[in-house]
Image (cartoon, rainbow, N blue to C red; front, side, top):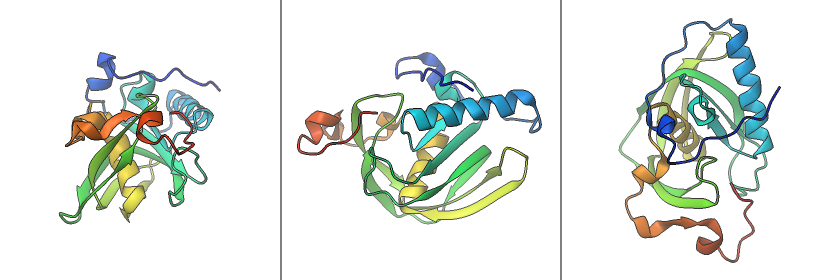
Length: 177
């Protein structure tokens, strides 16, 4: 349908807690998901949360096949996740570089739980219940953070590990966020 403008860090709407979805069969939800998919694919994103396009609902989409922003990432099935709940499975933390469509051109070294379990609903209201690790776990945590008004720089432990992609990785060709 449409590629939507992605809000950038500094827009106060990104700091709000999103509202749960209750009507899974609505035309409005279907249209939102089409716009989210179109926007995520057009910008080569690994995921997108509804608040990033100014819609204050607990909806995220994510999925990765080949992505120039994350060239070494494993494949993640394209997923619509509504009203998600995430639980860590253990205390194992990994730090890895993240970017975000709301912070174009920037990367940061972000700690995340390596192993998580998540539940939620798909676009039809069917239950999604998965245990994941590695990059998949990182992506779902990153996207779900948006639903609680959290942007990845808020999780960075060492601010010296945050900056412009071209400065941090001068010898790598990574597509801009």
